[in-house]
Length: 476
Image 1 (tube, helix red, strand yellow):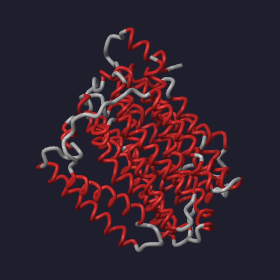
Image 2 (spheres, helix red, strand yellow):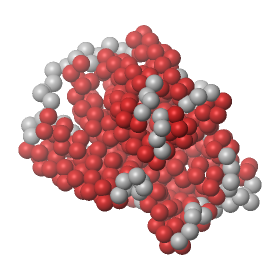
Image 3 (tube, rainbow, N blue to C red):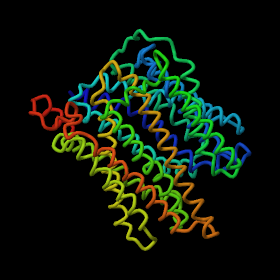
Image 4 (cartoon, rainbow, N blue to C red):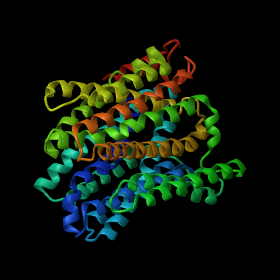
């Protein structure tokens, strides 16, 4: 039991934490990196975009790769590629080299997250999936929050190179743990790779991600971003036509006929738009609106990570008692309300009150993500798990990128209206709008049946000794 509910997710979380932390820790170090490689921080943001584009291109083939070569093998190889990309980043001495290195990192990251989740889903009985997911979702929530203070500390007291070099021991530990403890997964018979689908899906996802990421960058004209988004959308339409005709399409869109899967993906994506905006808006508001240092703002936002970790102790029991539908409806509304409350923060707000609100927000968001991730697989057959995984991962990346783009766009529009620099009220408006978008996720979950996902949550079913044991160990 211990190995299923805790050990396996935590082994996978080693790699996922490394990826999620690395994607945010670099943001605080951009000025220092830019000086060393003789470029500007604005131009260096292209390296961040290169990572997102790489994810968007290669996530769709992660399920096919796992089936073709074995999920355990691909997971370990993905960590190795991520380590290689990290070392290349540390030794980059020019902007092109750094961009290419981040793209290489993205290839590893594109395989680590979805394949890691696939390993967990295949190795975990459905009755234990909520408890296991509660451990796996922690790094996704903690990484972006601890990234800024860690990045600020390393850049201030060491050098920015260590941001990437610390991935080497963490990654090697993850490979060793995966080799020793992950279940063996033999390669399966797979149809040939849907290459036209790979090209179209890659253009669609990377076009949207790249366009949304650079549309507000001064380094490129806004029209370049709009054109790229348009190319991505057109490619997406062409992929839909292709997928309807192809015998074995890369992304199995027929899974969206399942109401539970459709609600979990679309509702989760709406909610992630708000969550994707928070790590971007909150530190900026603390630094620009409150006048705090990057390290001070990072230490304040870190308390959300504590709430995220604390939630795993009661998640399984909560979903068993109330069911997916009720918890996700109210969870999305309460979490969205916590985002809106950030729009009421001022320099006069007591810090203890802000910390308490951030703690509750992290608590609720952790519960929501655990539930929506588990619900994605609640009514998916074991044979279709490799098809569901890349779809959920692609939508996650797109929604997070959209959240950052939406937040940046709101700030741009707000400052253009009053014709001055960023003010505290600009951030307040942004928080209210992204909170409303996240709250809209509740509408999606209202369409679920009360018993939806009961095989996973155990809601409305007689408690078996096995189920009770799962709930008990999840609270330890």
